[in-house]
Image (cartoon, rainbow, N blue to C red):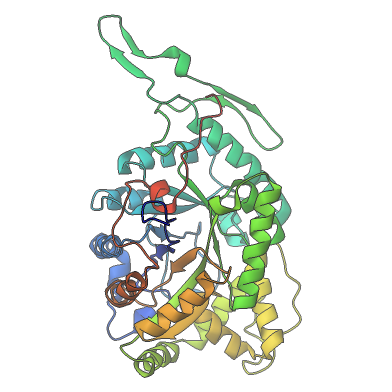
Length: 446
């Protein structure tokens, strides 16, 4: 086979998950970290540039809506991870980057579809086609109370509502055909009226008639990302998502999720290769494995037990503060909140016979995502194993501290990935769809 006909080698996709001053719950207390940087724009500009220097597909911001419930003296012990509203922040970061994708989490539960469609269309135009929407449904009662409701919507209803929400948003993104503007001063015609399509939607959850004023997004639709791993979440992802974030602890579970979701995608008549699955990974990097282990143990020593218990309680949906720290996790009925993540922690505790303390120590690092540590070569060995064994199309990287953790990944791990021809050495396109190898979707009116 000649060089010109040899198929291109499959490369990993990498997202840089930016949050506060690091993903480890003790990051803000680390001696090398300035916790004030979580409240400042300039450090985030630096992180965006570092990730772009590393040729990441995208930077990503999670989000929740409202302030968690609990005693103020307890909440004050933990860093606040969501200081900035992510879409506003990404509009600012679009101006200091050129190629890297810009992904924001926005919930379908409390924002009207028209608002979301307009905001993401604007970001896609402002950034030249780099926007991505991480589609979530809000899963806590304290978020519901921030919007005047007594409690969250039931889990299944949240996802059924989200499915219709996506249809509405796509319909609004298709308000105009491509290149609708004629700017004909002589004829007095600003746009081609044949290319305007007013959405008239009457569904179970949404009724609206309207159109966006902007032309179709640069990418057709901003890339749609989904992170739910429950049955309802996987159904939504299989029908709508182009990238799926997930939390998996070991290779067999990751393979089961990967193969199962790809099969669901095919059942929806979609190409499984067009849906990229990116498990989250928190890498602690050292020049040697021993140095990395020492760094990880230092981070673990910074966990405040009060915050560890609080985080685990919030994620599982039951107050664990009255149970013995070194006793077993009590019997738990998974509620209406973050079902897949709660089930992950319960299964982990039962399978490995972990105490409550041991569970929160595992959770505090990456909130259920996989934690790995070692030299750059060891980190790449671990990533490569999943990538080549039907467990991942790439990874969402959760640096334990910022900026050092992300800088170490870019300066030490990325070159090793490139040396093994597992990751790009340069961007070959300008949009997030280009980086992910995703086609630009046709308008439903085309």
